[in-house]
Amino acid sequence: MPRSRRDGTPARPPRKRKLTQLLVKRQRPAARAYLIWDTKLPGLALQIQPSGTRTFKVIYSYHGRPRWLHLGNANSIGLAAARRLAMEIMVQVARARDPAAEKRAARAQGTFAELAQRYVAEYASKRNKSWRQAAHLVTRWVLPKWAKLAPATITRADVRVLLGQLAHAPMLANQVLAATSAIFSWARKQDVLAVNPCSGIERNATTARDRILAASEVPKFWRAFDEAGLVVSAALKLCLLTGQRPGEVTHMRWEHIVDGWWEMPGVPQSGWPGTKNKQAHRVWLAVPVLEVLADFDAQPAGYVLATPRGAAVIGLAAAMRNVCAKLNAPRATPHDLRRTFSSCVTGLGFGINAMNRVTNHKEGGIASVYDRHTYAEENKAIMEKVAAHFIALAGAR
Image (cartoon, rainbow, N blue to C red; front, side, top):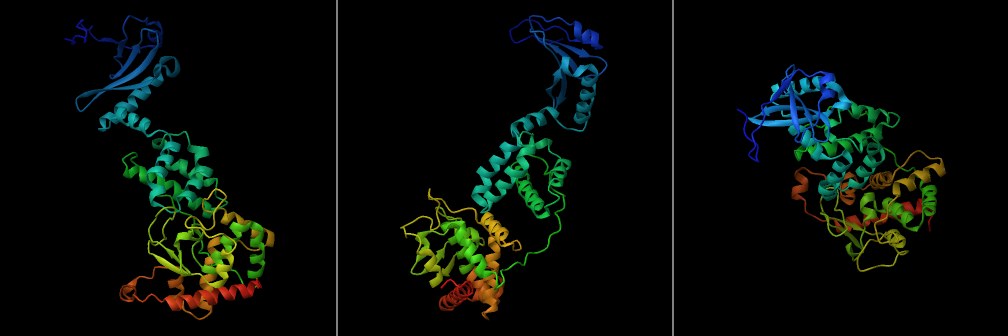
């Protein structure tokens, strides 16, 4: 016998009919919402609201508890479509799944745009030094297509279609794939998603970059740097003269310059992103470097190469593209300036160990465990000689 309602009034026995399209249209509303169960497909029901709205529902039991799943308005999907959807759901239930819970979880995820924002705010901005570049790739190439999609609905086929639009730029496609996959991987670890649709998709084959500036290119690039503006020009010149990573050069801070040394903390702190290998590093600022820095007023703290609002300088990659276009030179990046510096260190006879030391490459191995000599004087000599070599090539004096 049906249980009484909460207000104490007796519940009516369930209404069971073989639903037809005509029957669905002829049902009249009552003072209370009521159901008509379909005898042809158990679990499917038509709900009629007091307002007259007719909707199809699937009602099933999961771990002994009833689950209600909304299929749609009866004026929109029709009886035949409702039966097909209900059949698919009941098959999922037979496989021990809970479609209603999965639908609620998908709604809780929000959109892909919201998931990407959560990833940046809760993880990437705190753990990944290059998060801005990855976020830019997602904003530029992924969000225009997926911003409003529920993350759980995005499939591997969707990923392939997205990357197919970047077939002309295989390296860019790899970077977009990596940035997108990182979001899904994080969502999996947070139990927001069950699968990463980017997994199993092969990266495009690429060749290792070996671009360095030739001796004849150095004076041309040096002069072209000056047209990029004072701050950007100084940043590019420091990449070449010090051999440090572009991201570290752009975040150079006045409080880290002590007695002629640029002392980089290994870990992030107050506007400093930390070094790539998380090891503290000291760079001797050679005379040509100090001459570049002389164009900026020393401060107690803050970025050396700052924007008018005091933020770290940006736009080095774009500036290098403009320089290459103007000179009609092969593509070169800010990191290629670091590579040029490293090649100069070994080319001047200092050796690969010295090159790794002054550029903060983590060598590893048993030697790095036992050798604690700081090589301060040796590093000074290297930095002065390499910087002077580039100044001589550039004809800057």
